[in-house]
Length: 183
Image 1: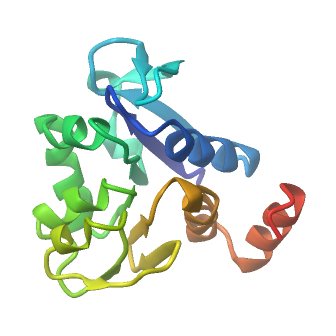
Image 2: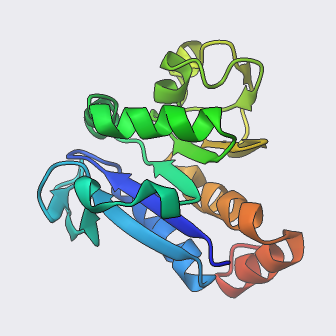
């Protein structure tokens, strides 16, 4: 069965974090959709870069989705957290053991929702105290079971590769890293 990933875009998202993950997953042939939570097809990032989405939140059939990805950035992170229907899905996915990923400031959302209790996680420096109940790691990307967190924009490739590894294996990730001259 083909895996499906949805990456959620709110106004003010961090472009590199969101698009690096989209790029790496699509390079690997993993079905990846960019989803707007704004009700608009085009969402503008924190550095004024508009990107056209594949679909709107209300068009997503979450029963067909294997992983949710929350990019960071400000005010993008706050805007994602303010999206009730998305937060409902984040809670459902986490509770059922489905994958939830967040990078930069966005792991704070998982912390606020109690999803990180007893799990290793990382976030943008200064956001660690919002990772409520987590075992804080200062690594580029951290996977603990169904939760993957990343530290920030400079860690976007490591975060994206951790997501690819979730669906594949270390050898596939090594080959992809080599292909993009990350090694």
